[in-house]
Length: 212
Image (cartoon, rainbow, N blue to C red):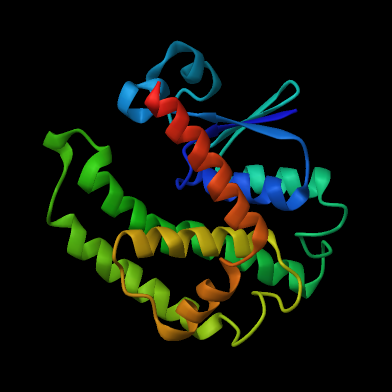
């Protein structure tokens, strides 16, 4: 049984979505930031940064969403979700993964840190237009790369699609402008049944635990 620690629409969604796609046995442990769950002794023992997602798979504890996705795809994917190593497709896949994490996501995380995540005395409102500029520049590049139809690598749905789609959902929540072709890609991919199902599942768990 794999345990995922996180909140429904955070980076943990990347992991819960792939777990649902993989059809493996897993459970969701809701981390209530409002109650300080991420600063509890038990959670900090799993991840000293107090950040999520975190998975437990047997004796393995793993943090960092991209690393978790790769591990799950390699162990449970049966050849799906990752291109064949050593191929051009694999190289392009890794390019997308790096780009999403280092370019698109970092701008959004800068916004998040200076809106709510950092202590108030460390937040700089002047960082927000800078982060928006960085996001817009990265989104323009992604717009030029993303295909007109299908997934990032054609017909194969991959880890990179999970990362890009969740990051674009994050951008939408932050009211960022997403270029047309990238927006069409988002609309296509976020209709996958596993994503719809896992959002319903994790949000129901979170709602029930918050009501207690």
